[in-house]
Amino acid sequence: MRGHRSVRVLAVAAALLVLATACASTQPAGGSPTTGPVKGGTLVFAIWQEPATLAPNYGNQTITGIVNAVAVEGLLRTDTGGNYQPVLAKAVPTEKNGGVKISGDGKRMDVTYELQPDIKWSDGRPFTSADVKFTWEAWMKDPKVVSREGYEQIESIDTPNDLTVLVHYKTIYSPYLTRFGTIMPKHILEKVADISASDYGRKPLGTGPFVITDFKAGDSITVERNPNYRKKGQPYLDKIIFRSVPSREVAVAQLKAGEVQGMWNLIEAQLPDLEKDANIKLSITPAPGVERIEMNTAVNKDGTDPNSVHPVLGDINLRRALIYATPKQQIIDRLLFGKARVGSSPVSQGWAAPKGLTQESYDPKKSNELLDQAGWVKGGDGIRTKNGVRASVTITTTTGDQLRERVEQILADEYKQIGVELKISNMPSSVLLSASWAAGDPRKRGAFDLDMYSSTPAIDPHQTVNLRYHSKQIPYPGNGGNGQNYTRFKNPEADKAIDEAGSALDLEKRAAAYAKALTLLNDAAVCIWLYERSAIEAFRTNVSGYAGQVWDGITWNTEDWYMKGTAPSY
Image (cartoon, rainbow, N blue to C red; front, side, top):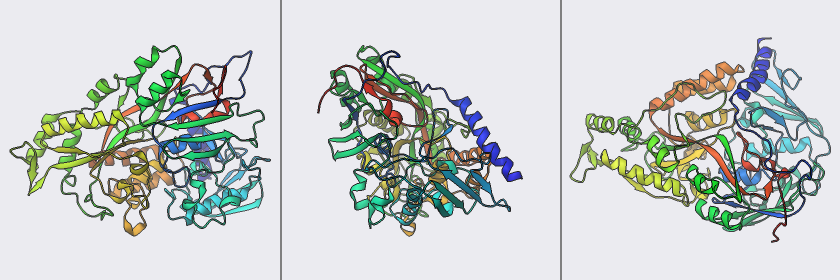
């Protein structure tokens, strides 16, 4: 009975704890209570990163999820308060409603999903339990998937009828509600030998409000109304065109000129200017994303040995010196108008956010002292050496991001003052953030020194923490490049804490375990947590229906979007 009580704690406490942390409204913007939404029209939405793929089993970029959300759905999703809500399932399975059952020995669990009836794929074929089972099978057999997190804990799946899915877990897997966030169509893919080489990567079939009909690399992605969408009369728009632009600044210029009606992912520094424009409305939502710098502790080499030691970053004193030399608050004040928060861990919001965890503050004097004590000696050019190794490293981030480029320049100046040379070598998001060993993601293959980007954990952070910081998740040739532990961080105590968090059912115990793991991560000084930002999008004033969502991207409710007045034609 103890396990059953714990499941009840998981379901009830999750709702209470997360609801207390929510601080954003999901009320749609605009709209008239008397006239209602307007049907028809094409909305052009600017994106300044382009997805390397739209296949959900391969995609790792945030922008992939932003585009995919209009077409591809899962069994459940979370609302802005972090509470799970049914989508293709009829209900959220819990112990209370009989959807979760713990084995008599308390070591395994079964989860049952009852599916909504009469759901169709956008091509008109029925959505059934066979699609859910196929999704699991596809993730497990394909060596190119971004991660098998959670799915490898499933022993088997039964489908007693078209609307029932019975998932048998090998263990107690506490983040079970995070699985099956996207479902793949069996009737389209079951005979495809290599899904990564198929058209699915450009036009994944889904059950959502829109159908992805065109993907022109470097230009645009077009989605059109799904005639088989289950919500009658929706979506309101005929089309959304995701227009690829080279930078945020270009997107802002097009938004001001009315060439696009919306844009993704502004930065705080752009707010004062846009707030003055009467033709533009802003959507600002607290977000769990954290901008960070990761330090590779293994040798910078393609297909690196995770047990090797980086000649510069392998020294913890040098890594700590870089943390002390990073002026986080000054970066926030200068580049983000003081409207962001200094980072402290990869989990910044929700019930699992560690309380009181901080990282060292800016102190270049301390940096110099550490390096002096560690035997790094300044040369005639001011750059330090130790045992014949020059303190020179390269930082990589995404091209087309002026904020990140300006941060790099600041860091290059600051690090030079402590005797560390910082070189800059950036690359497109589709390469750096592909999370694909085969596609050459340098983080996966270990061919980098420092990288800078952000990631956004779900309300249940297990996938983020386990994939990125468990030693079993270090990608290397021997495991086919699986895992996302890019720093090559290894700590048995952290591994144990992460394992405990993933198998416990009590939220307080899980939160304590994550806090321990993340404290050990900070102690290892392999990441620099720069800042926590809000999610900021902008629209022309004739666009309505959108709503910010703490735990999801702006496109989570595109079925509700509409445009007032005359819509442009394309």
